[in-house]
Amino acid sequence: MFDFQNLPVYKKAKLFHVNCKKIILEKKLDKYVLDQLGRASFSVPLNIAEGSGKFSKADRKNYFTTARASVFECVAVLDILKDERKLSDSEFEGMLKDADELSKILYAMIKNLS
Image (cartoon, rainbow, N blue to C red; front, side, top):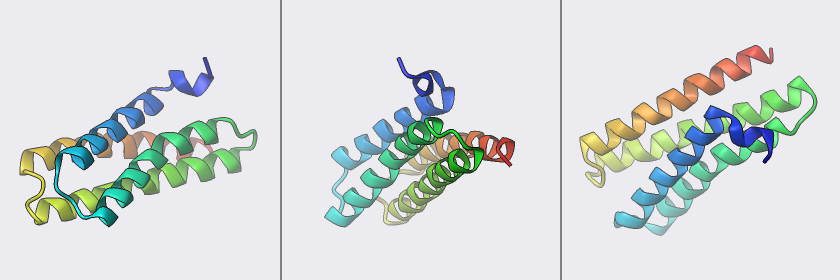
């Protein structure tokens, strides 16, 4: 097992991606929205994993910053889907809570590398 697989933030990022994927598979969304949400949510655990493999603090910080930015991108997509009534308020709030938790953990990781 790789060290990053034991990180709580990695596990949470994987679950966040799985939940985004459920939305992608269950909702009638435009192809570009499916693609954008899928790529952005997949980017979160991938950048955490890749950053964990870097030796310099600056490199790790860059990857964790990219992961956090991808969380923000997902929130923007989900927010628009809520406005378009493709997501219920409760679906959106649940996803927002998970995204907020991920964002806070990544922020702390980034600050610790400064």
